[in-house]
Structures are given as C-alpha cells and as structure tokens.
Image 1 (cartoon, rainbow, N blue to C red):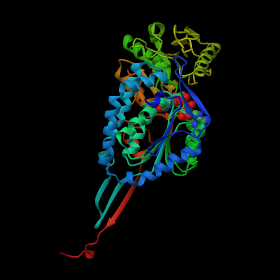
Image 2: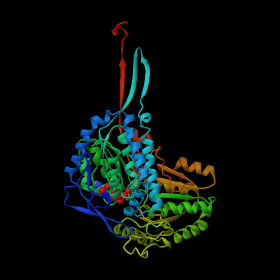
Image 3: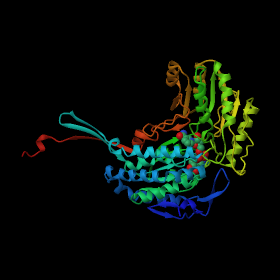
Image 4: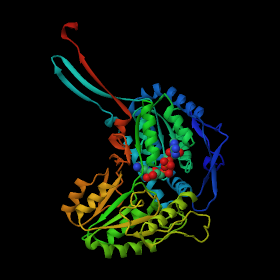
Amino acid sequence: MTTTQTARLRNFIDGEWRDSMATEGLDVINPATGDVLGRVPLSSAAEVDAAVQAAGKAFPGWRRTPVTERVQFLFKLKALLQQHGEELARTITTECGKTITESRGELQRMIENVEVACGAPILLQGDFSEDIANGVDEFMIRQPLGVCACICPFNFPGMIPFWFMPYAIACGNTYVVKPSEKVPLTMQRIAELIEQAGLPKGVFNLVNGTSETVDAILDHPDIKAVSFVGSTPVAKHVYARAAANGKRAQCQGGAKNPIIILPDADLETTTRITADSGYGCAGQRCLAASLVVMVGDARKPFTDALAEAARSRVMGHGLDEKVQMGPVISPQSKARVETLIGKAMQEGATPIVDGRNAAVSGFERGNFVRPTLLDNLNPNGEIIRTEIFGPVLGLVHMKTIDEAIAFVNSGAYGNMACIFTTSGANARKFRCEAEVGNVGINIGVAAPMAFFPFSGARESFFGDLHGQGRHAIEFFTQTKVVVERWPKEWTRQF
Ligand code: NAD
C-alpha cells in the first residue's frame, strides 16, 4: 500500500518517514467529488528544524560527491517517474481536479526538468583565463550553497517543485520541499520514488504544513536559499522575510494574462488556443489567459467563436478522458470566482456566457464553475486588474495595436502576454514592447521549456534568477573567483 492511500500524511526527513508531531491538520479533498483523500499535518518549526538539520548533515558528503555521480540519481528518478507516470497523473487529477490529459502534460514538464538538470556536469562548468597578468591566471568555479528549500502552490503539485529541486540537488545542495497543503499527495508519492532511487539520506526532505511551516523555513538560519511559487501577496511576504534573514530568494507570484487578437488572426486556431488558455486547468494556471484584447474588426467574429468554445467545453471529473475541464480547487475558490463574476457585472460587464451555479450530474459536491465569457469589462473597474484564477475570460476592445500594448503594460502583473496575428511586423513590435516575462506569438500558454528560465516580471516575480535551466544553476550556486600565481623561481627545476 502506498502512503497516498493512508489517512494521515507523513514527513520524509533524514531518509525516513516520520509521523508529524502536529496535533492540527487539514483534510485533503478531491475537488470533483468532495471526498476526503487524506489529512495533512501542519508541521511545526521543530519539524522544519529536524529536516534542515538532516539536510545540513548530508551536505558535506553530497557536495563532495562528484557531479557525474550526483546526476546518476536523477537518471534513476527519471526512469521511476516515467514508470509510475500514469499513477502520478491520476494522483494529480484526483487531488487537484485538472483533466487527466492536463496531468499527463504536467508530468511531462516535470520530467523534462530532471532531464535538463542531468546536464549539470556541463552546466556547472566555470571559466578560466590564462595569463591575466604576468604568470597569473584567474578562474571562476561554482559551488553549492548548502540547504535550500521550496514552497509550492496548489495548481501544479508535481511540476513546480521540479522547477527547482533537481537543479539544487544536481548542483550539490541538499533540499527541503514544502508542498501546498491542498495537494500534498503527489509529492508524497514522488518522495517515495526519490527514496527508491537511492539518494543518500538527508539530501531530500519533505515537510508538510502551511503558513507556520513556511515562516519556520524563512526564519531558519541554516537555509541559504528559498524558492517560492504562489499568490503575489504571499510572494512579497516570502521575498521580504527571506531577504531580511539573509537568504537568496526567487518568488513567483500571481498573474492577469492578456491575449491580444488582431483582426488578421486565424479564426479557428486563435479561438481554440485562446479558449484552452482561459479554460484549461479551469483557469488555474499562472499562464492562463484572463483578458482578451480584441483589436478593431476582430471583435465580432472572435466574440462569437469564443462564446461557442465556452458553451461547448465538456466539464466534469478529470479522470473521464472525454472531459475538457475539471473543477476549481475548493468551495472557497468557487465562491470567490463566482463573486468576482458578479462584481464584474455590477461594474458594467455583459455576461455572454455565465458559468455560475454550475452542477455536474453525479458530482454534486464538486467545485464546478462553467467557462465564463464576459464582454466589455469596465476599464476603470477592479475586475480588469484582479487575478480571478478560475475559468473566466474578460473581453476588452481597442482600436489599435498601440492601444492594446499600452493596455498590456498598464497592468500590475507581468507573467505572460500573447498576440494572435498573421502579421510578422505586428508580432515583432509586440514581442519588443510587451513588458512581461513570457511572450506568446500565436501561442496561448507561453510556458518555457525546462532549458529556458520560467520568466515572470513586475508583480509576478520578485528576484532576479528564475526557476529552470541555467537560471536555476546560477541560483543554486555561489561563484568563486580564484586569482593565482605560481612564480617560476619558487619551483625546483627537474
Ligand atoms: P498561495 O499563495 O495561497 O500558497 C502558496 C504557498 O504559500 C502554499 O504552500 C501555502 O502553504 C503558503 N502560504 C499561503 N499563505 C501563506 C502565508 N500567509 N504565509 C506564509 N505562507 C503562506 O497560492 P495558491 O493558492 O496555492 O496558488 C495559486 C497562486 O499561485 C495564484 O496566484 C497563481 O497565479 C500563482 N502561481 C504562480 C505561478 C508563477 O509561475 N508565477 C505558478 C503557479 C501558480
């Protein structure tokens, strides 16, 4: 029996599974059925300390393990993740609600990060300059930092820890993962696979919990670097507290992603991709489209086509292969999304498709919100600026591409912006002028591959080095520059 079937989740510390000492816990609930899947303990600062002590103890041995040996563990982990892929995808769907196809996609993205981290032997290489002065050489090496940690959100329970953890470990650091308390089962199972892969004890640790556990991570003097993904207010809190405690921090926050549609865009492709961006994962992707900016004559055909896409999307339990959209994560989330839809209408928006009060037969306790399409969002209202994180697309209308780009740049967030057009010159202008970290051109979810940084900007990101690829390698290493001289006169002649 795997731990995903047991009632109370455990922490994985110093190579062993430990029952948390916490008396308090939270139920983990299947968002499609309302069934309780387990109970997550709210681990205390003492348990974070135990994990950090274990990671600290493991660090000297792990950092001196040759990188070529360290990555062998990642190769084994990759094989195990693939071998258990379908089971992991089903776990993601069961606790997070997304469709099984979306969970398989998440898993693929997760594995790609392991693959890229396996390149650590070359990615970690330093620089060498001979003869920077007479008889003097200078070189730069990268060394691991020590104990590092990540704090994760609910919407990608498998992938997001992998934007950081495989790179940290490949670089010679030791690690603590704190999954989202809403979706801890996936990481619990992955920790079992990590154990099976034979990583030395203490190199990887898992501590469950919520804000108290997070603050214990942020305050722990022996944690050198923290990676965070979640909402902007918490990202700001984590960034400020980690920095105040002398840690490196990279904090990815919320989003309000716009898609610009120019009149020359291809109707069929643009509609399909835009609807998938807005309604895929029930709008709970940090790269989900939230605003559709129609330019000029795009308005009529694309509004009609998006309305049809919203109405026809098949909603239900994500394990049903026919289903195209699952529930939102919790009853609180459903209530919040529905309140925001109502608020947009009070502010003057017209509901073309109103997804509130949805029910799916057989899943009456599920947190379902149907795809929603709102026209004429109030440009001075609150909803045009607020992250909804649900299946809601709001339409705004502009006369020119310049107005549309100015609108994109006027938002507080900078996670992603996309444009749909058949004009290269307009696409190029947009690519250059959009003030966001990830740009899509005829792409609806511009998710960077694992060998590119997951760039976010402005209120969507706090820090400088992002997750994934070379940025992760830099984040998880300290550069050391050595300048050395070996005078000939000191050397015995042979
Ligand atoms: P959240 O901010 O509520 O929680 C994220 C993590 O922070 C969790 O582990 C949680 O336990 C912890 N946390 C929550 N409140 C805290 C507090 N007051 N003090 C300390 N820790 C706290 O986010 P969520 O609801 O799990 O995830 C959705 C959010 O994440 C959305 O805003 C979404 O845009 C964002 N997100 C961003 C990206 C990105 O790459 N920029 C990716 C995925 C999700």
